[in-house]
Each structure stands twice: as C-alpha cells, then as structure tokens.
Image (cartoon, rainbow, N blue to C red):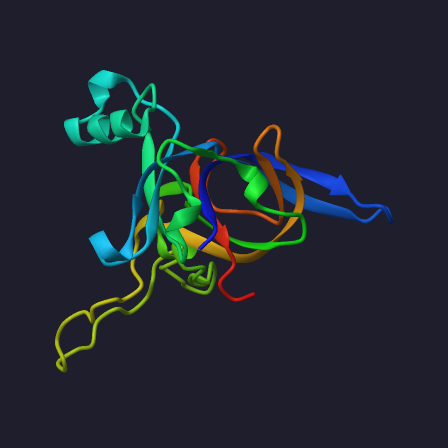
Length: 209
C-alpha cells in the first residue's frame, strides 16, 4: 500500500482554474528513509519500514540506533512505521521517499491523534442536551439517570459518562489531493485532518477508492 509518515503543517485555501475555492490541509509527507524491507521468504509478508524525522542519539535505544546505522542514516528517526506492500523489489534500504509518489487527484486516508480536551462533562463529550434551567430544574449540566435499579443493579459498561475527551487515534477517509509540491514534500489535501499543527500523521492511499 502506498503511504508515508508526515506532519500536519496547517490549513489554508486554494483556488482552481475556474475560481472555485477549496479549503485544504497542508501535510509535509516525508522525506522518509527506508529503514528495512520485509519479504515473504524471510519474514512471511512484504512490507517496508519507514523512518521519519530525527532524534538525539541519547534518546534512541540500541535497536533503533542499530536499524538507523544499517540504513546508513546519520541520525536515528523520531518515528518508524511499517507499511504493507505487494512488491518489495521497488524499495532499497537507505533510500529516501518523498511526496512525489503521490499525484494530484488521488484520494488518501489520513490518520492522526486528535487534540486532547482534558476531562469534560457529558454535554461537551457527548453533546447531551442537559436539564431545564427553570421550573424547579436542579440538574442543568448533569447526565441524568445512569442506574438500572434492582436489575441488573449496576451501571452498564460503556455508559456515556464524564471523562477524558479527545487525544485518540482517528482516520479521515477519501481526502482528495488538490496539489502536490514534490520539491518541498508538501501535499495539499481537501478538508481537515485530525490533530494539532505539527502533529504526526500517517498518509496512505484510500482503501475505499
């Protein structure tokens, strides 16, 4: 599967030849270093291990440092991710892969970690309506009844309750590539993607297109 590790740069807007405005998210896709290539004969499946970014030598474990040295990288990558592929002969260890593998008009699935919102109540977390403000209402922002009385006598697992909101992995599917800047390794995709500016994202070819 065609894919890269990238970083969310931010949002902007682009005009096409007909003057139609499209809101886009700018993603720095790569350059990713090929750290390792898996094949069917040795590993039982075909995949490529990409490395993105860099980290200080003191922050890299022996395994990561060893893989980086094997690939000929100057520094250990900050993030490594494996992508399944069908043909492992197309990749060589140590090669750099950039945004040029994608083309304008293609569709992508982008995975990222959403912004963390901290501990939130049910009105923010699940969009509950809340209680009435007048006529004796005494539970303005509370969830209401959560118990089941005598049977089963406990709160059912999965009940919508206050708690941690955000900071979860999410994938947005079928985002169209509006523009590709291969020289700067930038991809402009239509719409929004999860996470803050500077957050790490995984960019892959859409599986439903």
